Image (cartoon, rainbow, N blue to C red):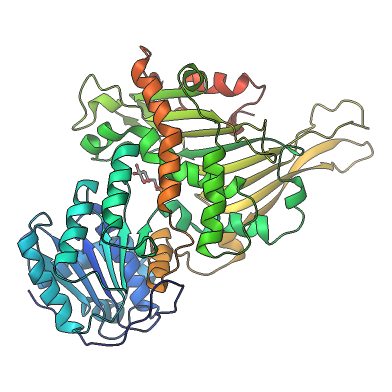
Amino acid sequence: MVCNGMGGEGLDIGEAQQTKGQPVDVVIFGGTGDLAKRKLLPALYHLNNSGWLGEGSMVLGVSRGNIDSAAYRDVVREACQQHVDAEYFSAAAWDSFAARLHYLSLDATSQEEYAALAACLQQEDSSGDRVRVFYLATSPDLFVPICQSLATVNLVTPKARMVLEKPLGHNLASARLINQQVGQVFQENQIFRIDHYLGKEAVQNLIALRFANAFFEPLWGRTSVSHVQITLAESLGVEGRGSFYDKTGALRDMVQNHMLQLLCIIAMEPPISIQPTAVRNEKLKVLQALKPLIGDEALRNSVRGQYRGGIVDGAPAPAYVDEPNVPDDSTTETFVALRAEISTWRWAGVPFYLRTGKRLAHHLSEVAVTFRQVPHLIFGSSRHMMPNRLVIRLQPDEGIKLGLMVKAPGERMRLRSVALNLNFAETFKARQVDAYERLLMDVLRGDLTLFIHRDEQEAAWTWVEPIMAAWAASEDMPRPYPAGSWGPPSASALIARDNFAWFEES
Ligand code: BG6
């Protein structure tokens, strides 16, 4: 074990603080795992480059593997070369980052081993005064043991921050238990429950769009909006995560967290400020106002599917049950479509359709807000008449499109729908900051605005759990859909019942 670096001053926690340039410690449990390699370490590489990890900072990878810091740096270098754009990877930047990188082999379940962790960290910061981030990129079973063990070796200082990666539990009871037990060690304002969707630029732009422009607000609600669609479609399959995914399914993996968070951002009332409590309280109210889907209501308003073999992006793709580590008789859903309603004055009666799945036709995440038709058409009938639609594209090609009716050039009044199109990459030529980089920066600053409060997380489970229960009690199986399609036909039927169609079908 080698822990090189310099000591330094820390900052108070509890409110957003600027820690740029200060020495900080970032300890990643699951330091050799897939998330660390694909996202966290490349994000930290960029943060170091932009001056967020001050002189003497330490990035400590922790896992059970029996390697030393030198070997870890080799692993991380390969990961960064793979996941950082070549134009931002340089030998000098790497050397600076590598100097902060260390590794500690530790069995997270063995309390005795934490003394070595404390020694490693205290070697650089004996007063325990600097901001110290513990990032748990591990299975949720380890969250509580890790927090308790950190406490036994006095690593839970006022400036310690705990980042919990999803899944945070498997259902309401397990999430509550984790929250309660982690809460006995860390204060709520030290706990950063991460949902990487909130770190996506386009999601924050949705907040900007709604609350930095005057003209959306009067239209944002039941009198002007006919319905909202949220699509998080992936063309990838389960990508070697078969055993995890089979116990999880699309409802837990995507709806309980990412989709409901997006729905909150779309539907929340204007918060009084961008401060964490203000924003998180408004999101919580949306979750609490979701009309419960219980028993037959859940079955009527949900569709679950599972992919069969097919063609995706021009290449053959196997059926879900033929993926490694997935049982042949699996009934896990790889697709979900839901019709939700929010029981508030603003949204009563406006359907929110949510759809997510693996092995769909395209990789596409977007929110589409469709407005009502004009109340009276002065032009007589026009087959080209389309309702206005605001589409916020999260990925790929982040941007915002507003569909407007205009007159086509020519002598006659012929109407056409055209889009006002804002493509972020073309408009802002700056490097796109990855969601994890953005959120890790917020952790360093101590800004909780884009993290999930315990109450939000539990409210999300409270809404999702009866749907899981209704599925479990029903004899229906997930509907099959070919890989490379838009999901089972019953998903189209779900929305067609209200005389709407999924956006790409209309
Ligand atoms: C993760 C899910 O939270 O989000 C994955 O566990 C999913 O199954 C991923 O693939 C999607 O994230 P993104 O940013 O690629 O849309």
